[in-house]
Image (cartoon, rainbow, N blue to C red):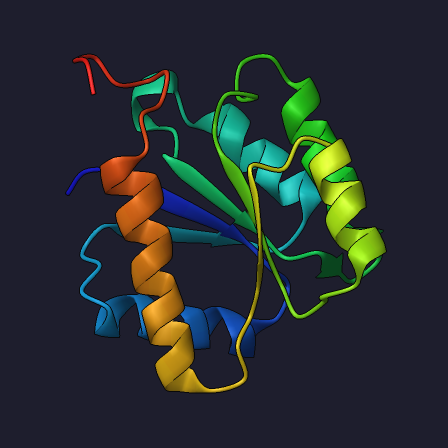
Length: 142
């Protein structure tokens, strides 16, 4: 599997938990982690089209900034706006969900409280977004 995931999250513990869940789910691709919007844009600008992530997972509640602002920044940048962005958060607030979809989110997923459920969730996320979802970057038809 050559597709990679970019996780934007500022909690080292949450990042490690998600990394472990991905591994337990059978994901063998690359997971890159950055801490916030500025780091995310630097990462995206540093990676060319052939090395860009196939999926961006974005935490909604980042220290010092809102994930929805980072989402808007990504979706306003023409070169990377096509990359699917899924919000991965603990918030199930309807206003947060609405704000994220209004800002261009491709999905909104609430983190489960149990590790086994996180493994199952991560399996569904990477299987759908990296194996089943057709994207603009695919060279061959779906």
